[in-house]
Image (cartoon, rainbow, N blue to C red; front, top):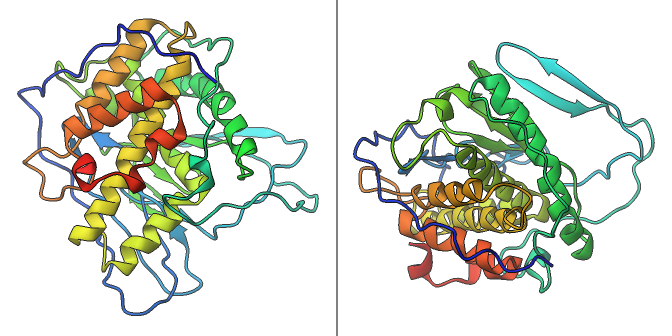
Length: 351
């Protein structure tokens, strides 16, 4: 397991004076009408000093399922093991750039399955975390869409290598996350998405909006590689939740509580988002042992602590900034998934 983090990470900065209003929310989850299956939950990345409101789409049996801090969906929650050999192709359009694996023609083997549980999910077992790696060669940061794409794609193999062993130990399915750069309006399995909103996690894919992040301004969110690495780590935290079954379980729990925007539904949503933030802090821990420069780690932690539910926003769905700061640093210092089990935390700790 990773060594203890360095002692010189910086505390979160205060909010900048010029943060703006929240984006328009996604449609809320309908009230529960039956015990039928929940179908979709979505996860969008944080806005600096504010967040996109969670949107959840419910449907009837046979529909698609998703996950969001914005909008997300999985056609069904079963895992198909990766083929032993794959080829990778890159497709570029005006809307997105993504690498996807060619489908396998072989018959999938039986493998680990996700556990549709929350606090007692196997990912919370003792001894699991982000493991040390020898290094992570990242390119010089260029804040253009192409430059962000290069930086994030270089970061992901490092993150995958740190987390895959824990899934194997927990006997949970694992597959690499996909990355799509969104530079114009697109439609995916989770709905419509434009280039001016925050990043979104959906159905095994991070939808990254490079123009949004390049245009963020303020002392709390400078254009620094740490901001990008920190936000990528948060979105990857949702991938951990998706693979383990937590996203589907939280979606079902919100549905049973009457919707995401009920008091109980918002509490569940904050637990989900704060856990992704805590997992993001865990991701940064091994990288702080010399894999990347120390200032990148410090800025990543500070940026995460400056995001959350500020008073201007109507729904408390991501947790207060001080709670985000507490959880990202808690994950960073402990690097144990059990320390990020927000599902058993007190209500005060996820407010």
